[in-house]
Structure formats: structure tokens, C-alpha cells
Image 1 (cartoon, rainbow over the protein chains, first blue to last red):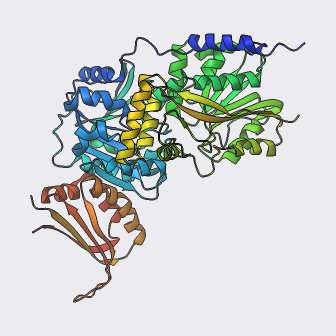
Image 2 (cartoon, one colour):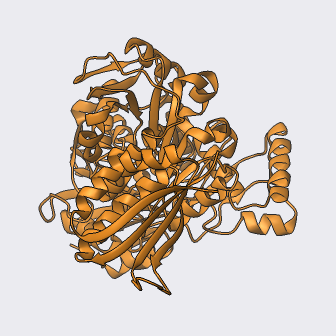
Image 3 (cartoon, each protein chain N blue to C red):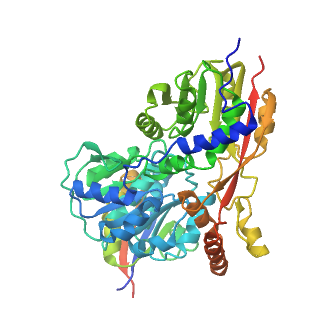
Length: 471
Length: 96
């Protein structure tokens, strides 16, 4: 007799209740971690650094730190930011270097932001998009390194005392993991979003002149964003996917592109050791964070995290009972990734895929006048786009059918992104970057009014599908 | 403060690959050091010496900034890549 599938419940009514319970019971933010600005200040104090140069992908992680400790930020370098926030960067503009690609949605928004920051310095990487998942330091490290060295040598930047911290030390302070290399003026390197190699290719050159301090941990950037999403309505999409996959005890489960491990931890909680859980990701940085987060949740014993590219999975044919992936197949060669996930699944096994739906507008819940509403609702205004061969549209369903999957179930879903989240802040900035000053004013007013009556949200769509590999 | 102009004129280019490698590093380094490219390309007319060759003109806020750009580790790295790939003349001049 087959064991019953691991689902929340067989009855739809029960499922609603249980899913709600789970939403509360599952991941919560560790209460003992201070906010990132407090942690950063504590870290600099511990290393006896009054002020430092900073560099990162975007400025969101530093926003409150910059406003609370303006003198501690001698300069800021942003590498291929997805968007610029002229308001918080204004006071720093004379000490700001923006290294940006010359194409893609990010560089368009950056150009818009720079028009409000005339004092900022800009270095352009030719023929480059710099997507959120790009390995910038590996792909354009030489150009980026040359730009940073030239910028930091510029007369007029505030003097920075050489760091007295011992080089080659690692540790964790206030929820922030750090590693110190080299000697000289301190240069604090924040995580570079989803970049697999992070800053590493640039460290030898930078630490020859600077005391580099690379930071990590769940308070920053992509990990913070992925973890926040893992505490949000997005988990309803994940739970719907897991319910349709109906995983049985004993079945092996593979997640392709597990990131910081949100879904793997959810699965570990559900299966409680009854299943082999395999999380693969191409990013050593995210895997390190995923292990740390799973260890913290007491779930690491149940999860096998390891390196693996979706386009060439390091697993034999037919090795897996259930394979899934969420918001990964946008970022590479979708045909290759889909054929790989089918290859490693056993005949009769199930495959579940979720991708961002960039062919559906985001629902920006504001009563705007029609012309502005149409502009705000245009697909592509919000979001990081996709790789040239990625999949982030309805073609997901057709592609899965073409691979011969049977019993295909297609269920696009909508998730509300709520005020107070990093994500809604980022989405608003992305919208504002496309608006004229007058339109931006009307937009901000509408947001303020909707926040007062509690009706402000931005909903985003995901394409979801589950099918069975023919036996 | 008077602006400064970085004027590079090329007499010959013996190794275009080295020049391309140089440009990949030098462009971002010069921009990051505060330089603004005003002109970059092959001369369209040449009088006197008559060299229809590459010319680059970059504006800086001051001679100090231009000199610092040239002496920065980033630009020096670019020069290493260029090596003997081009015969050229680089001058920094103060604006009037």
C-alpha cells in the first residue's frame, strides 16, 4: 500500500486553515539580530574603524546607516545597481561612483536616477547589462577594479585613516559575517546580490591598496530579500506547488537553484527527515548563507546543499523522484535547464516549475488617472527582466508539454507585495524611475493616500506548472 | 578653478588588441576619476603633420584631478596592458 501523500490536508477547507497556521509557524526573522545599520556600526566599532569607503550593489542596505552615520561613509561605489534612489543618495552624490552597464532595464533606470544626481561619478561598462544574477567581478572585474582604484585615488574624497584591524581575520558580529584582507584605508564590500563569485576576483587587486572587509549574512541584499519573500505571500505559491507535487514519504526531492534555502527549509519542516532533500545552486555565496540559515533553524541535518548549475546538473539520469525550481529559469538558457531537470527525474517522477510572469502586468493598487495608470501597468516597468534565453512567460507551459510531460497542471498565481517590505520599496523606485516629475508627484500622493486607508499593495504574477515524466 | 584637458594623440597603432584591452580598463578608470570624454575617435581632418590618427580629449575639473587620474593604480594597470601597442603623445593642459 502506498503511503499517503504529504499534503497539508485532503480537504480544501482544512488546507486553508492549516496553510494559515503554517504561515505563522514557519520562518520568522531571528529576533536576536539587530537592524543592519546597528550591526554595521557595531562591526566598525569593533574593528576600530571611524570611517570607511563602502561598495555594494545597491544602496538599500546602507540607507539608514548613511542617514544615521553620514561621516562614517567616506565614499560609496555601486556596481550595476538595479535602480538609484536619488533621495537617500543626494547628500553623498559628490562621493558616489556608479559603475553601470550600457543596456538592460537596470541601466535605463540608473540613467534616470543619475539625472537627479548630477554630482555623481559614472563609469560605463560597454556592451554589458549587469543582471542581478550576473557575476560582475568575474565578467568585468578588470574594468571595475580600474574604475574603483581611480575613483578612490581621487583628490577631494574625505581622508580615511588606515585600518588597524589585523588582516586575514574572519568572524561574525551582530548577525553580520565579515572577512578582513589587506592593509590600508578600510573598504567595506557589501554582498553583490546573486553574483555567484561575489567580490572574490577583485580582492587580490583591491586588498593590495586597501583593507577590504567583505560582509555576508542574512541581513543583506539578496539573502535578505529572498528571506523576506520567504515570510511573505510568495509562500502561498510555494505551498500550492508542493501540494500539487504531493510528495510521498521516502521520495527524493531536488530543488534547482535553491538560493538561500527558503523552500528547502519549508520542505524539511514538512517531511521531518522522511525524505532526501537535495538543494543545488550555482552560487557558493548563497549556499554558504543557505547552510547557515538551515543550521540556525535546526534543519541542516535534513538538507543536502551543494553546488550545481541548472544548465548542467551534477546528477545522474533518473536519480530524482520529485524535482522543482522557483524563479530560476529566467536567468539562463531555459531549454537547457528544462531538459536537465527532466533528465535527472525518474520516469513517473514529477516536475514543478515556477517563474516570474513578465508577460503579465504588476497590479499596482492605486486609483491613478488613466494615462498614468496605463504607464504604471506596462509590463516590464517593474522587475529584473530575464536572460536572452530565459523563460518568464506563458511559453513555460508549452515548453513543458513539448518535453513530453503528462498530466500537466498549469496554475498562474498572484502574490500581494505589502508596504513595509524591501520589495515594495524597490518596486516603487522602479516605477518612479520611468515617470516625469509631475507624474511622480501624483504617484507619491496616491501611495500616501492608499497607505492611510490600508489599501496599498503591488501584486505580482507567477507562472506555475507541474507535470509527470512519462514512464 | 580652471578645468583641465587631457589630450592624447596617436601617431601609430601597432597592436589593436592591446589598445582594445587598454580601452576596457582606461575608459571606466578615467570616468571614475572624474574625467568626461569630449571627443574620442579617428581625426576627420589632419593638417600640417597630416596624421589621420586616433585622438582623445577628456575634460577634468582640475589639473590635480587629471594628474590623479593618470597616476591612479587603475589607469596605470591600463597602461601596462597597452604596453608598446601604440605610439602616442599625452598632454594635460589647463583650460583658459
